[in-house]
Amino acid sequence: MEEELKCPVCGSLFREPIILPCSHNVCLPCARTIAVQTPEGEPHLPQPLLHSRGSGPPPPDHDAAQLSQALNGVSDKAKEAKEFLVQLKNILQQVQENGLDYEACLVAQCDALVDALTRQKAKLLTKVTKEREHKLKMVWDQINHCTLKLRQSTGLMEYCLEVIKENDPSGFLQISDALIKRVQVSQEQWVKGALEPKVSAEFDLTLDSEPLLQAIHQLDFIQMKSVPVPVTVPPGPLLQLEKCCTHNNSVTLAWRMPPFTHSPVDGYILELDDGDGGQFREVYVGKETLCTIDGLHFNSTYNARVKAFNSSGVGPYSKTVVLQTSDVAWFTFDPNSGHRDIILSNDNQTATCSSYDDRVVLGTAAFSKGVHYWELHVDRYDNHPDPAFGVARASVVKDMMLGKDDKAWAMYVDNNRSWFMHCNSHTNRTEGGVCKGATVGVLLDLNKHTLTFFINGQQQGPTAFSHVDGVFMPALSLNRNVQVTLHTGLEVPTNLGRPKLSGN
Image 1 (tube, rainbow, N blue to C red):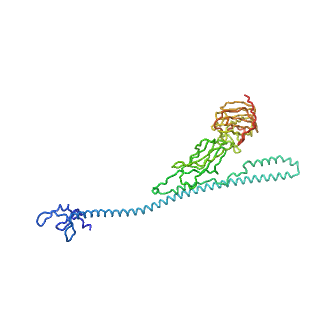
Image 2 (cartoon, rainbow, N blue to C red):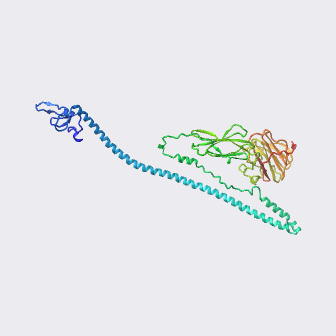
Image 3 (spheres, rainbow, N blue to C red):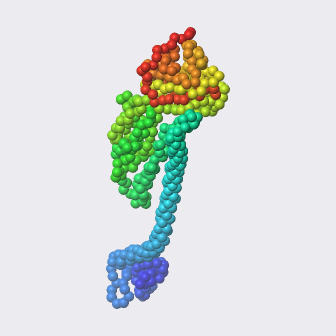
């Protein structure tokens, strides 16, 4: 069919076709270049006619032109359709190949996530195992230690009962002192806390899997997230009151998000007031859900609250929790702040020194408000040294006597008299010193901003220092000839003696 519609002159589809007298079909432009000889011998240009071969008159010129144009259009579309079919078949093959590739890639990515989760699971199980083994070891050590002490005590009691039953007064007198000392030593072995478990049976390990679960639920192909889900601000967190507590002048707060919370959380803001009903202030910003705040005022009531935030903004506050710090300060000597020559024992409550030079050690508490009193018992006092008792800043010089720089306020004392010292200025010499068995009391009144000292319950000299303001830590300086034991958690005494008069 297509060959029959081509011009024999130009070889293309007919354009304005005509029929020659010889019954051949050509294009009109091609016919213009052909001279046709008529029977009369005159050159004649054929008329543009098109008709099918056979009998009958040729069709009109206008209809032939329309049919020719329509056939040209159909021929062009037929070519495009053939090319489009080839393109579709290629796409079909590519879809098959790309689908298999993407499936393999997705499986590999998910397998990698599962492998990572499996490895993390193994790490977490290792931590739990170590924690369990540590707790078991601590308990077994305490069981063995307590069993040994109990066996020793029981044997000693049985032996003493047998001795008491003997009817030999003279023999009893010979060994009674030794037995009494042995019994006393045995009793002293049961120190405070010896009959308390050193570890808890509870495991303080909480796995926060909620963010990971949210990430898994949101895992999707990027092109399928054409309709983004609006992110709303998170709701108010829930304070976990069973985990909120105070210790000395520190508070610990814990919180969590309400169940079935779908809004993402980028972090939390913890706020605390000033312990006196003042304005709230930010004390922590981060992703943790447990926070401990140190260095607060003793005997103060604090209000705390927390809120969550994400990319959409900050959510509402939680309910407010009220926490009360300790009425009195319990503290020890700080092994981290003391000079390296300081030697601590008795759970950091007893201090001495390995050097003949004076060395400084601080307490673990810091005071900026309220009234505080503590005592130091002189356990050993040899060769008339000059220990110094008082308060200091955290940056006090540690390798010389307390009070020689501007960071400490102290009373140093020998076996006969005492002086007050600050910035190496010695004032208010007062008769009366210390010896083995003496007790030195330190009264820091930050309401009146004064510092006062006592020896064996009697005020030593006048008020040592006035206009005392800022943050202070209990402090002590001593050398190897002195050993003292710290006693804290004491109420301010009301029966302290009147001051001795100073010498000059």
